[in-house]
Image (tube, rainbow, N blue to C red; front, side):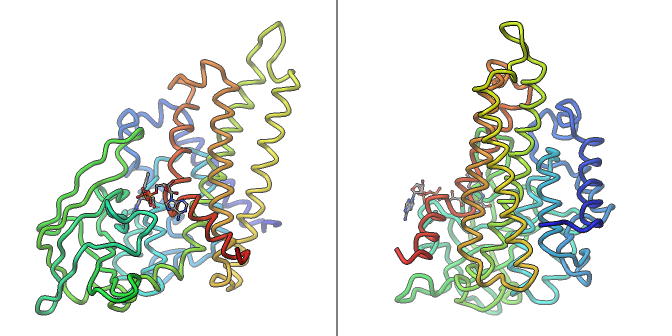
Length: 378
Ligand SMILES: Cc1cc2nc3c(=O)[nH]c(=O)nc-3n(C[C@H](O)[C@H](O)[C@H](O)COP(=O)(O)OP(=O)(O)OC[C@H]3O[C@@H](n4cnc5c(N)ncnc54)[C@H](O)[C@@H]3O)c2cc1C
């Protein structure tokens, strides 16, 4: 697609911001306490002051009222710029459900907070319910004018830094397991809620959650009781596009960095970029990224044109392709940098670690292939 002048200026301004604030490993280490934090409150606050957080959120809830094209420009540029704001995308994903099904008060508080740099989390996965999310069991039992929650969630990104959790609960057992599920907003400081970090290959991003008699007022139901599955399914194309746009940015960053490296690294008396095997590999990666980017903005444009509900398959295709391209690019780039690709100082090992998770979360890429396959009537 051809971007408007305003969209191009917006993307360029975000690129400049990232270059100034977090381009070097030293800058990022200061912002993230040596790489141990996934989010920098300082960067989030600056982005909020610039009015760039929640660019696609309606103005009445504190956003800029633009569309998914602008949101994807933001996600791509901040991901390419390695801005430490990983949890913003989780909040943005949660925002889609609040926007569609939240009460006015939930929208004002939660979407408004997101635009001011606050973070939000979504607790869907459970130890026994990953890809098969419909078998979620965390119990919410009606009690007076509210619900009492007992059970466990796992893999909840950003729960330790978020204001609220959007929790998938089981309010009744029905013939179809997808019925009887209900979404509730739970503040992260609720009595009876324990948040425990899961150690991974990355900075602290994910958590186990333990609910013991957590009381939630009935006013904190999001959407209709028993209809959570339907609510969650409706927004999937946007959620998958969010991951896809970030992945395009991550892939582009890996390519930017490896191009710089192969131009200056000499072996056998010449830059390694002069070897045809190296050039061809980079040409393939650049082509994959260009195609992925085009598809992301095509889907974004169609969502902005009101076609969102017809784009479930395209959302899956974008998530599948872009996350695989980001992973492939980071791995190939590391190989092209030889031993230096493996060293923290050169940054590519971080890109590799980051690129391994998106094919897993937001519905694994195998599940995306299943959805695409169904669209092909297989
Ligand atoms: C970094 C990270 C962040 C996350 N953030 C969140 C979050 O914020 N909130 C949240 O709720 N969850 C989150 N998750 C959880 C994530 O959504 C799940 O890990 C994912 O849905 C897969 O579930 P699982 O891990 O239980 O794997 P399983 O479902 O057990 O799958 C294991 C393997 O089997 C394959 N598989 C399963 N079923 C099929 C099938 N029908 N056909 C073919 N292959 C199949 C899967 O693709 C996978 O390769 C996060 C995960 C990670 C790693």
